[in-house]
Length: 194
Image (cartoon, rainbow, N blue to C red; front, side):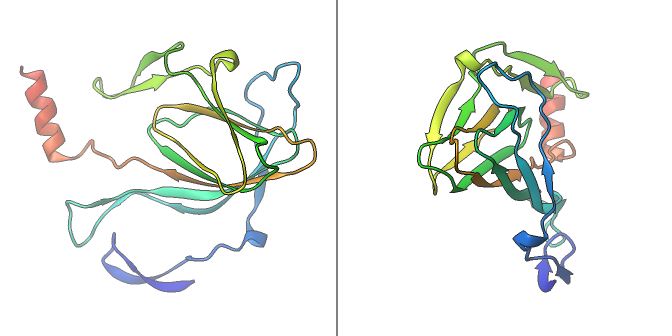
């Protein structure tokens, strides 16, 4: 724990600012999609270091602090992190360790099977994109490479190495809530009334 300024409360607080790798609890990722015949059933291990909520600044109510989560992902040789839609979040990854050109990130083709899913608010919609392996955009990565997944996209990670474990650092950036923003409410009302 260390003393740091906390913008949401406008105070100095004690906060966890260091997360030691040996103290991170690892959890096996689930297999959520049927694997193809030529793919292994090996899954990755994910750990979370920090989980910071989105909040409004205490010193300026017009400033919203985005929330974020970060941690590590280990993929054993032939390991797969199944396809996932990131929703309204953005994700950023940095490859810490892997065999050169053996860690694959694949993005679902946004032109395939796209539909709109209505949320509670009739004007809030989320893209639903299906991951179709034959249509995916694939990139091979090496140690030190970085990649990002923009909101409302689907990605998948696979370690093609037969011998070397891959380790990736990840950050999920949560969207700032705009539902209570007075300017947004005014704009939505204006659209409804023509």
